[in-house]
Image: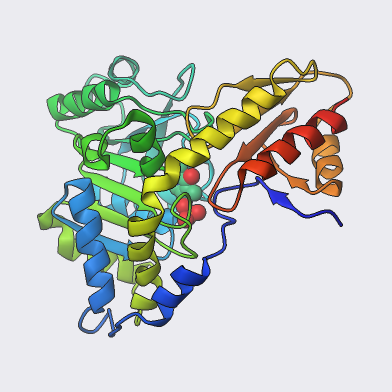
Length: 342
Ligand SMILES: *Cc1c(COP(=O)(O)O)cnc(C)c1O
């Protein structure tokens, strides 16, 4: 077997020796009983980075996202979401089951949910239609190929939410990538949002974990919802030490992943079998143009040569760069993909 270049997701990173050391040496306590000191430190650090009052550590982005929505949305109302949002497609109908809300998907040409598109989707109040109880945005947008929502668009959505009296949730699993791509602090992009989810287990390279940031008055309820969902963890400092380590060592290098995604796109540009969405961050979407290439036939052929990617549609592939993908991996991946599609 050739060495594997794993471009399936930025979740496949393995914790480095130094990160593992930080985990092993973490000061810990029972976080459900009396707070774990390392977890408290991470939560404070994340809240500060996002410009929010408080944050909690969660085992997954899905649980943190679902808690955010549960905090904001009233059962029996509807939530405005971009039509290809992670919350809608990849969280196993959690919104319906856990928050009992209906989703009103808003179609966009490129994954960027603007205030204009949202305004057109808001229904005038009437006793005959669902009441809207919130808006959720995703930055970067995964299904749109790591697409960045610019500051002005996020601010516009925030202004509309305020005007309508609606809370705004930000699914920021890759907010770090958006901030790096725009050259702004994460707090700037989080400013319009009431609640913000960020992942530690993607671009930051931690083995486990996400956080939800929220206003002070939501603290007690957020704690309760997390506990109810089974997210109360004990000596979680073992995990949050990885987060603190990653904020110090991996946050500043995230633009390297963007450069690698661009290198991959540039290296394949001009190949007659593919068309790419130019990557803005660390996700490259590759459309297969030639018969009989399909995701189902191409993915195993790439895998046999050691390049792993995922399917994002019958003739669409997704390749994601991350901490464990090097410059030379990218060069090899370009060669192998070009050969397999020859
Ligand atoms: C990965 C992801 C999540 C969920 O995170 P998990 O830790 O995998 O549960 C939520 N939103 C977006 C945009 C994601 O990419």
